View 1: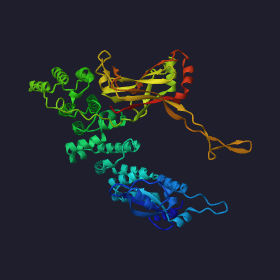
View 2 (view 1 turned 180 degrees about the vertical axis):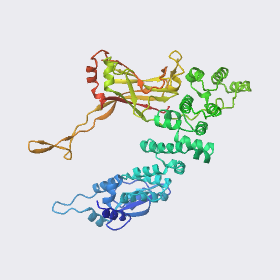
View 3 (view 1 turned 30 degrees about the vertical axis):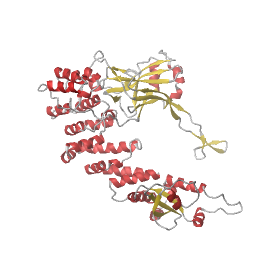
View 4 (view 1 turned 120 degrees about the vertical axis):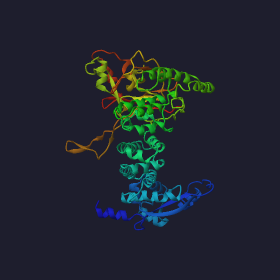
Length: 566
């Protein structure tokens, strides 16, 4: 398309020239809307009145442009065409859209908005259909409001352009703070997971590169709230390797502000202690003072640890400044459920232990994780599974292993690492997976198999995928092959459809034994057993044939999804 033609289309926005429709903006009337009536081909104005809405502005528009750039307007136009009277008799020439519109007035396309203040943003979104450009100098608030309208009207390319513009703005500290101050306008993570993840990743990167600027301009509480927006909870941070690395890059003062924030969430305080362990392992600079380490350790709310950590792991952590005597007192304090007796214990410990620090005095953190409902997909290579069944361990010296798509070696919940640890085949030959739980890597070096005796539970679902072939469709636009002298179109190869073959739910009642961890491990190990599994040379030939529907791209795959607590 020529540049002159593009400029001509841009100038058509809001113009009566060649206009064949009208966009009608309306807001809700005060009071109770009128009762709904049977739908008829009455005017848009009457329909709006019946719906309890007030028409506030009209925008001359052009169907060819709107329908080509918005699924919303395209759907309205299709509905309008379907509601038109029966077509003319064969000997009559059918009326064009323009002729129909001129005979009954311009086609009216309703757009409902919540208030008059939204009008500039919805107009800007529609202008994008004509120009492909966003308003010059638009700030983050405006961009996010336009994004909301573009999402609602399903305008092609607008959301992507806005996300790109925001990514540019957050390359400065001022841009990050501007976005933070209007964060309520951002879409929810489940609505736009990729966009939100990329925006927050860019903000964290900027903060890591220029943290001194934030430290010098923000009070500790304000800095903590900003950090909670970027690192909302401990388990989801530790389950994402990229986010965990950005957390580890925080300076000590920022880490202190994050742990001090009352809005920083977790599934268990053990996960917060684990996050601190990762941070300390990544920050071994001798310039960091012992006072900084002590303050960070004091911010962990030890009285809210789960029992496996409180009794099993806590005494083995060398960098945690807690004596054997105070650990015994802490266990006694946690075990005492009567509030009066707890107060008496604190009074008895006066002068011996600092019972006003967060170890004892802080309330439990909010129970939440931002990745609830997000499936962490995992895969096992077909050739590794075959070698495992054939007992060809030389091909997989570390044992049968799998990996998560986000690069995590294992996922984190309740302060422990979780991963598919057993693959078994039920009586119907369908593969199922069971979760395993292990001491996390930073603490694995401190324990042995004999040290670890305990159980844990998690709210999660683990699934195995099956792939079904989709019927191929004939498509004349696809590549042609020659049969004799004629060119015959090939059938379009449709990708297989993924479905859940098996799944298992885990809840509070489903306890899993805690195993010794794997220090510095890069993957997880699992065992295979069940119907048809016979480990012997050449045994994989039959098993792989039966598993064919479960392989895609020569990988067995599934997912682990954390669930909200009931």
